[in-house]
Image (cartoon, rainbow, N blue to C red; front, side, top):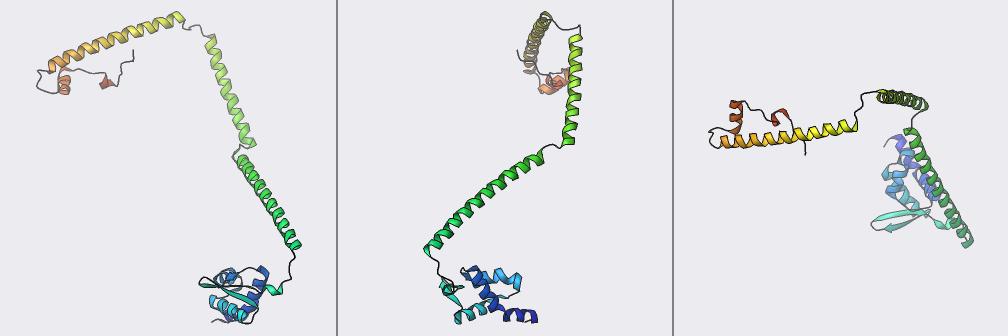
Length: 217
């Protein structure tokens, strides 16, 4: 054992006694070791020996809890607490609990507000965004002005005429495609090769070859 560890072990009983009295709650040897190891450099063996020594000397109490021993301060050394004092402590606990809940709620509100502010645009960013929107609006106004000033507007009659012609040509397209399909199918009945080979030999190009689709009626 190193000199530092030996000194810590020698002072372990005093450290543990003071700790248990200050905390005034039950601990296992593992709990005490975990709580004080970093601060005082106590080894687990030194903690166990010191607790057993204090218990034998009657300075702390020891009880079996399942398969492990629990250590706590001797309650006889503490002054008796009256019912009135207990009620006062209970009331204080209730008040502090309510205060903690209120503070937690305030923290949540502030965190939400901070998140909102963090995600919002800064003043320079907002000014830049406004300028870009103004520029965009000016472009739309100029475009609208040009449209209104144009003299080549399509009249409703002209529009209707275009629709009628479209329907006419689509109808003719559909009719001719059906005729071509029926004719090719009739030829293919006696053709020894595949449909694709026939089209290639004859030089037939389909709508699908050019990714063209017949519009819906």
